[in-house]
Amino acid sequence: MRISLNYRSAGEVFDMNFFHSDPFYISRESKSYSSIPSFHYHDAYEILYIVSGELHYHIGSQPFQLVGGSMLLIRKNDEHRLINPNGAKFERVTLLFKEEFLGGLLSGDLSFHPLSAFQSGSGSLRLKGQEQGYVEAIFAKMAAESANEFPESGFYLKILLSELLIYIHRLLNSGRPYMNCSTNQVYQRISHITHFINHHYDQRLTLEELAVRFHVSPSHLSRTFKESTGFTLIEYVNHVRIKQACHLLKESNWQVSAIAESVGFGNSTHFGRTFKSIIGLSPLKFRKNPQAGYMAVKQQKA
Image (cartoon, rainbow, N blue to C red; front, top):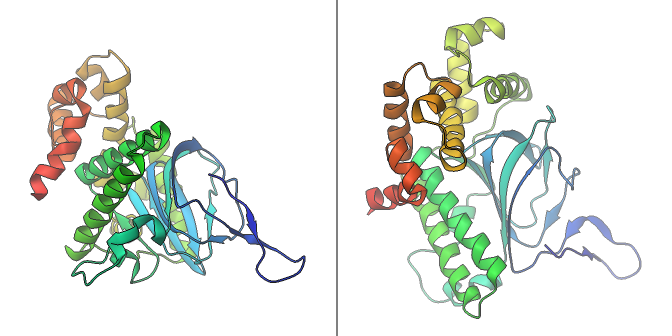
């Protein structure tokens, strides 16, 4: 992204925390640190999506715990900061866009406003497995189109952005919890637990065993984990395992049984049932056509 410092007032004093954004920008990257560690803000709306790993964000004084499948919606001019206390690797998609990029979509008397998802303020949203695949497919199309720069790319990117904003709008209207935040003490503990799961997903992980390891009661861990991440503990463990399984199905020639064992499932039957419940396809069908799994969500929403 081409970023430049902006002079807030006349003279030689400029604001080091403000960044100009392009009308549209998207990136997907794996890293363990932020190139902008301090509070900052910019003149664009931002959609941050965590593909894998876990991060902490502050928007103003409000903390957010983000795990794989989390989406953070940040209004323009809201100060925010990324914090990665464990220094662990994470993968994220960063999408920035200005109102001007949507152009004519913002004019007229519309029953739906493309920026309605931001009207309640900045906040976070947790996506289920197939929903994650759906938005990741849109992000992949955006990244490819942005890189190709065909004459019609600007128009197509506007269509893809509109599709994403409509999808988010419908998720929010479905009653999905939004603006989940937690106290510092709670989210520090949950951060340690998610960090442990992200690096030990191939091991036996139960609510009772994790409660003992992290010195909390199972009932307290169950409640606070759900409040902080939007997932039950077993849902989160399964999502981490299936995300890794998807990677192995696409990038390796391992047999399904070997992949199931490598990501922590005791048998292939349980793995296949869990995989299909999250992705919408069997592991073998996903291996043949990963994009088909992403389209399953669209068919269900129709």
